[in-house]
Image 1: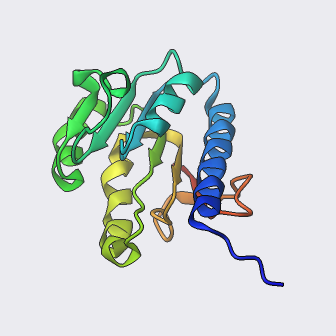
Image 2: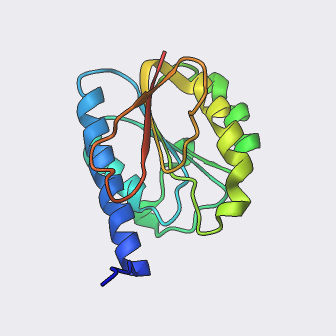
Length: 167
């Protein structure tokens, strides 16, 4: 009998993998200085989890819009709304080289619509990264990027999640 994964099963796999990957990354950057960057606020679940993993760190958040409850809305000076191709270059000089962990949760159910972002988002994130920074993503945004060393992210057996160490 073939096992069919329901939409709920896939969501559980995705969120479980994401939680494990973020916990692993938190351990990797523990004791080092730097900001956390969240690319894709979405419903605010991951941002809320990042706040619990990194209570002393500032978290920079980028997304097209913020449709989240007030309790999940980042501080205004850490929330950058608009197209990534506009907001990331516009803020890079404020935070150049200051990010220790960047998390890009940019996927959607419309796989065909996101091919372009996979190729350019890494280049827009890179100037923010401190030497030795970690990048996690639900998409292979760092594949083939010079200076990005692919990492084996634990807990990715049921859902692909990607990690790199940069610099």
